[in-house]
Length: 375
Image (cartoon, rainbow, N blue to C red):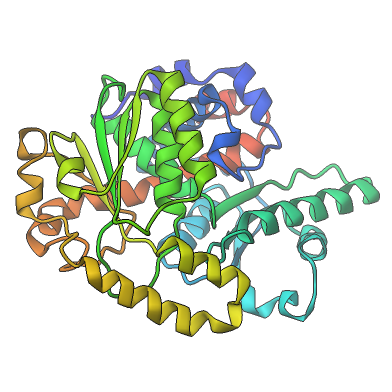
């Protein structure tokens, strides 16, 4: 079920949009709930216009850099697709091609890119303590350059995944949940669970972003993982505080079966052991050895897989399966569960495109509501 465009327009508050002009998205935790809800309404509006081929070229003539320090397919595609649909030109830059490895600071990188850019997306997610800090440095570098030049351009930063959060993914997940549960998310139960993966030690940012975002909407969020796979304390503390404020709940458990019991939604996703992810920060030269140790640790928990037996324990045996993709089929999730959910997770993934479009539009376009109304 999708909400009709006139109704969506009524959900877009001009006063909230005013507060979002020029705004970067570095962490969803730094945006108020009403700002996030307005962003989701804008994303849904842009999706409807895109389906009809009527997205106005709101950012024609702009250059949007995407700076990636980690591999990506879906997010790169979503960044480029969002930029093009809004009339701009995307340019993806490999982080290894920058001068950061040769001592260039984040502020200097920001100033160099900010000379020409109109928006900048960044993925820097592998090393705890570095990614989000780098993005803030880039933001300061761009803003300092613009101030000194007397340049009134607005150049927002969009976090395309860092060590703390993956905002465009979790906001896409929120948009998908809002569509699937149009009567509201309050009281719904989601199991955000670790699952086994043999591929690589994945960042912590997706589960961290999920627990800090979804607890703000009155959901009952269960975080499940084996011992040793804890998340950053600042994220679990934030999730607990949000749950108390919203009327939802937040629980941490070490049993996947318990987490799935009567859940409305399940999100089984692998991430690396906390202590080894910390070692990545302190000894980056040992990255290969740390990766091997993480995969060996993962092997101790191969039974953590989302299969038909676990799904049968969810509410009605038919919980909504979610994943940020690509899922390790046969490890994180069984082939049968994934086959049943294939169309659903594709729809979920597609929401990222419209979230990025919305983040760029609310930051860049004055009188956005009127521009969408006239499209």
